Image (cartoon, rainbow, N blue to C red):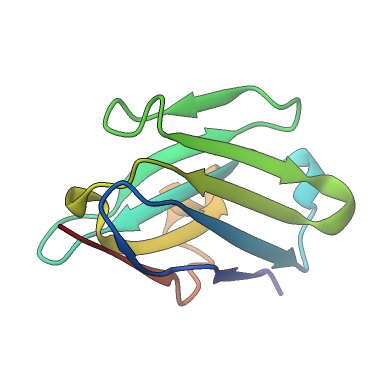
Length: 117
């Protein structure tokens, strides 16, 4: 059974940094494109960043230049380094494979990120 466990969220002041981690189990992690998603209160879940098996990355315009996604296939883990955080980054952050996300599968509990102004 595929499972993702997100961690690293917390409360931070605007301009601060956080590093999120997502540990994957029960899946062929290394071959999948992995994504970080977020859902703010009252809004739909959105893709923040993704990284494919070869390390190529994509970022939403709202986080480009501030967030960095990376992966460690040996540890079945994907990371999201978040710098220069803004109050509008406040959300629950999730990771998933891009394919599973499109199918509505395997969502974990997420990790809460709160940025105070």
